[in-house]
Image 1 (cartoon, rainbow over the protein chains, first blue to last red):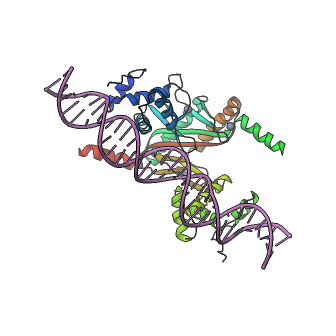
Image 2: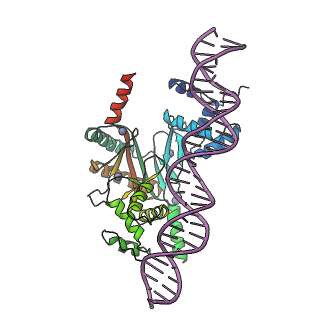
Image 3: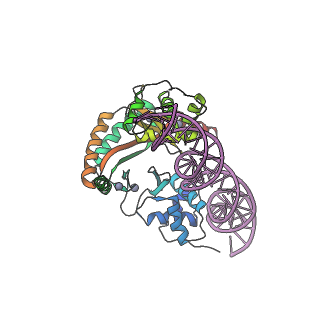
Length: 164
Length: 164
DNA sequence: GGCTTTTTGAAAATAATTTTCACTATCATT
DNA sequence: AATGATAGTGAAAATTATTTTCAAAAAGCC
Ligand SMILES: [Zn+2]
Ligand SMILES: [Zn+2]
Ligand SMILES: [Zn+2]
Ligand SMILES: [Zn+2]
């Protein structure tokens, strides 16, 4: 029984084959789930979506598909400190490309931002060049994230304080 | 049986009391373990050191002490993507203050660096100010980390490749 | 020293992720 | 289109880091 191919662009097939991996139904389905949202999904989130659509796909497979997609650079894995990995497309169809995260340490809300990238670029160039020379590392990636308290959480704290 | 106080500066007592917590032997011992190294220790690493010195101290207590020390800002917790938290003193006696990390994606080696901070400062100021205005977050912290391949790992890859 | 509350520690529980292994699907070759 | 070698899948079990539970011990205030 052939299961057919989930809806979506066929490029994943090419990318996988390019790396010597097979193009499979679950891998396409996991990619689809990530394409359909702008959220930062956990492995289980992805599983719930994928398994909801195609009940034959199991959690283990979702973990493996995510790992592979990360390895070939199609998906990026983040850690927002809540003890589980978060995944999102490296190049999101909704114009969400390279971006960084602003995380509320209070409620866990995550904002994707793409502002002030010129200043960042300057900083990155200087630093990466320096790191390469001084420590002889070939820099392949960077992780920039800001932590803070969102407006709502600041409000809530004030209310609680005031109510005492 | 009083256990005495492990060697070390007495300031932890004041800080803890300032926050309404008690000054205890295990907390001092955990702080000591972190002071004695420049490594980025996992909770279990800390436990091995502390339990080696003071066998009555258990792993649970080490976890709790680390959490507390992070909460009061004496210790900082990092995640280098290997599935466990890493801890280091916020202000290290060996002049290791605010710094960032350069992680080898291949062997996991972590380099602390404090170079090019002027450029970084510029970037941070611009970005933090912008984030505050645009997203109404009160920024409290940032996380900057570079990933790459260290010289040794690059060499090894070449050797393996050449050997085939 | 006695008292109240916080902290501790061993064991059990939890939660995310990985491993195992028999079965199945992919795809290069016929 | 059928074949077969190999990679991928899925359910269950295993592993790993961390948290919870709860009775006993220690801290700090009188
Ligand atoms: Zn918030
Ligand atoms: Zn994002
Ligand atoms: Zn390395
Ligand atoms: Zn460090």
